Image (tube, rainbow, N blue to C red; front, top):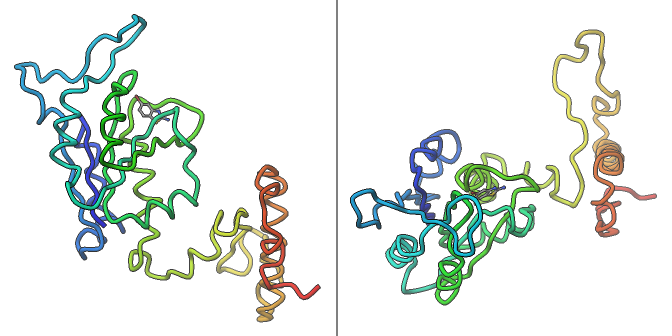
Length: 241
Ligand SMILES: Nc1nc2cc(Br)ccc2s1
């Protein structure tokens, strides 16, 4: 997968040399480049923002630098997917992460201030699929932190990035449920034991216990998720009730 990131703070993305994303880059699973939006400014102050038409507080990101940057980065060939984090975007959920992980080329645009001039997105939509994404109902200083989150959620889904792809199958949101509690050694810690079933070796009963715990946790913490649950998720072939 090819990923391009456009930002006025490219140094925000130094962490992308670390951990599994760094390894994905080193092994060629991820081809990532970070671009400074000011590269495409031509004034001495390298200006990227201006006052909003219609008045109001704050500043808006000027269209000219963005237009030139996207001209340089969006390919003439097979269309890339332009992802722009914004509080006004569609919610990032695991389904969207899977959708983005299937793309061959992602371009991330990091807005700042009150946002990017709308004409930039409208112009980009003539040559790329544009997706505005929200991480939740809160406002950040800019899109950079959101891109780090989205990129991690997407990259970990790429074949070969996670050592054991099996972990993707049972994690939270994999089947529309939250993952239940997990335990490891020692068998007793500060007088707290481990549910006996997990040490029984009965894999069928263990799978049913884990499904039940996931359903209970989801019902307690995210009852909204139960409303959209498919019947298969209740059993997922593990319970012969
Ligand atoms: N939750 C989010 N807040 C923001 C703020 C700016 Br400015 C740009 C993108 C995002 S995504």
